[in-house]
Image (tube, rainbow, N blue to C red; front, side, top):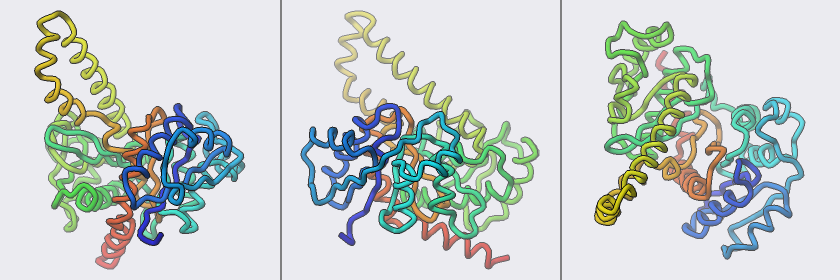
Length: 339
């Protein structure tokens, strides 16, 4: 049991809960022997889904809850009043050390508020940040922040850069990851007040590889490995990325079905095309970890299907095994001692 990574999955969160959530979580526990799965949610609904699958019963647990936080509910009020919801119970298990990680496709606001209020921030972290992986020409980049801090300060962005660098190096395996700050031009003097104030601070950091400004059009080309911005800009980049990617995939598939010639061509290129399109499929990268908390909290898309939930669980295992929270805490404390 001590070697198992205990992952709590909110079975009631998201548009496709509980069916797709349970399906993805069970796929993960069936694929790896180092996962102990805990499903939080309405007992009858969760157990009804579980009956459809075979799985190692000694590594799957259901923690019944009586409440569900809906997407439209005010997050702060929901966390305070719905103590027996699948989100609050799951987050509380992480805080108490009963679980190593929590995954939810439910209310973004509730997960963000609950993550900070229940799990708590690492000492020294001013603001946690949501950090999804996004596909690039040659691999992936980490977009930080994409939804947690719309009104960020320069010191927040510096911490985002440090946390993002640690994640990319130890989870993704990128040595000395390149850090760029989103800007409207490459020149240092460009940008809004936040970017202009943050740029020189990032240049001073000795524990990150800061490469300067990065324009949005250069992100898909892999101009940097850690893309730093405040949440308003990050969320716009993420949503545009997802929208353009989905449209391009549909256009390509539609074009290949135009006539007999294109259909024959599609048969020939299908294996290569499938591999290429898979690289731009968001479900392959799991969810967005809320970096800067004492425990791991991962937020997946509200529309998540089984594949994204499955990969989010794998993400939790790697995060825990690489001790990312501990590495972030150590880096922040070392930085404090420097000043």
